[in-house]
Image (cartoon, rainbow, N blue to C red; front, side):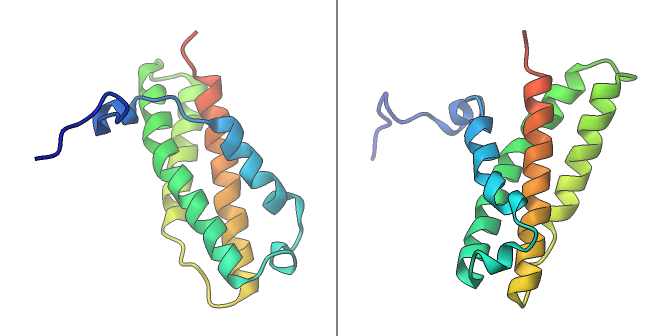
Length: 127
């Protein structure tokens, strides 16, 4: 039977680690800076970017939602954050695309959601 070591955080502990929004934002910059990212990246690279952004969103969505629910119900920050969460959930349902142009467009939409949720996560950080 394998034993957990002190260096291996449990799943519950890992869920409460702060997110590295600086790295997440940095990964979106190149995609968002290009009008047509499919000219800079090829199909497999675009799919890898999509996968990375999807992973970020899967971590950001519950974190932002949890921080938003702590705010007063009529808070504008809460309303905007939950709208961003809803938008990001919708974008997670987007397919990968069957051409580089579509893959690029999907990567851009996912990147915008990552950037948006990073902003909400940082703005609602406990002080």
